[in-house]
Image 1 (cartoon, rainbow, N blue to C red):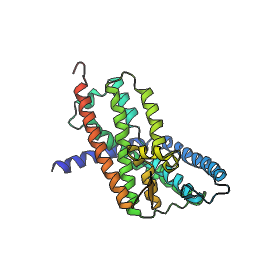
Image 2: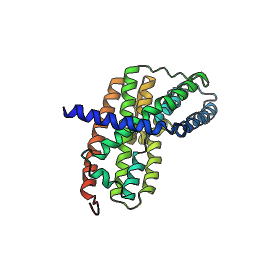
Image 3: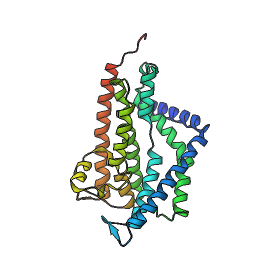
Image 4: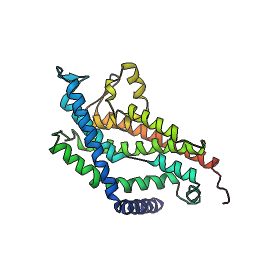
Length: 271
């Protein structure tokens, strides 16, 4: 009964967020320029890099374009600003209203993200998908649709939890914006947003293999393409997604511990 009630609450929050953002969908649609422009830049760069080369680090030119096409779609699906929103609530004092509610704020924020990204599926993801296929000619057929969907779902959760942990630093720091910006840049680099992680030196790949960031972009992108390799480790799709599931569970535990510590530290003046 408790699970059914919780599901109903999450669905209600998600639907309310969907309707709220649907009123401003033109703002969301403006981001449609970002993905295609970034992809076009990658086309120019890698076309020059691949001159005279059939493959680089085991990837052909077409596989590289597919990598960036899939990575762009995953970015649209898992896009998250829970860190900024949480820090704004703490800094402005508005978080006190959430501290009084029986639902933990991280669950409320996750429900909001589900509603927000549900709208993005047809406002952002579908148009960009069609653009990549019919304009750029990118092959975006997943090698194993089931594993690809599951891996992208884990990516969705991982990106939220990592960002939420960053947002929780606001309970210890007066101004956490600087740390947030630096961390998000490093996160994108270590996630494989700018360049596949298999292009990093071997020593760096070994470090990146044990960090949570590869599970946001690199791993789901490689699973989508049908093969996974990093730091000399080759995994089947099932093994890769299983490793991702373990990483999601560990990150969820870490987020819960940090959240509970933040709630013990939080003081609502006048409440």
